[in-house]
Amino acid sequence: MNRWLITLVAGIAAVTLSGAVMAAQAEAPAPEKAPAKAAGRGNRGQIQRFKNALAKLTLTDDQKKKVDEAVTATQAEMKKIREGEGTPQEKRPKNQAAIKAFREKLNTILTPEQQKQLREEMKPKADPAAPKAEPADVTKGTRSE
Image (cartoon, rainbow, N blue to C red; front, side, top):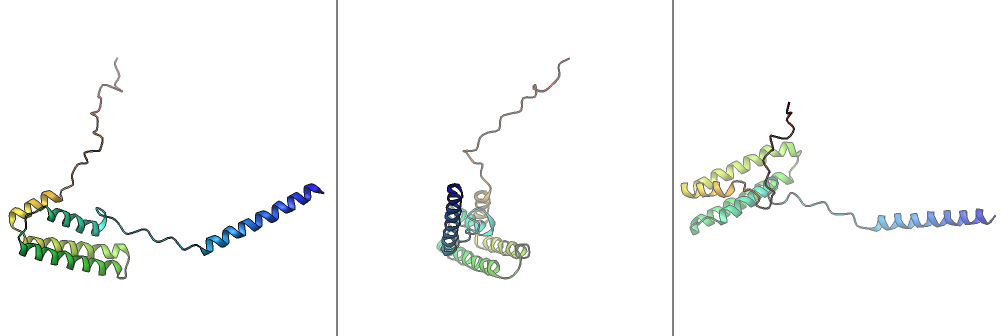
């Protein structure tokens, strides 16, 4: 009889606790969506890379103003695309067209030398912290007969 009573009390306690846990989860706010792709990923990251690279160039005040206007217009266009209807696959060509138009606009603002500098700044840089690959040992794994 004692064993039966202990089992009953334990069962009631388990049901009560699981109900309390479920109620607490229902009251907890839903976790926010993860932020969109950060710098270096996706098209917003690409605009940020352009901004970082452009900051390293020596621009006239007029060029700075025109570049800022082009960046702002491109970001607004990309936001409109991002928030619009369609799947990511449908939006991708629109984003690519916006980036292409932005590059073309930059080419009308920058001098040929600045364009060259921008291309150099935009090239992917090797990560100095990345481990260097060891050359393969061609002597291992060969048969000596």
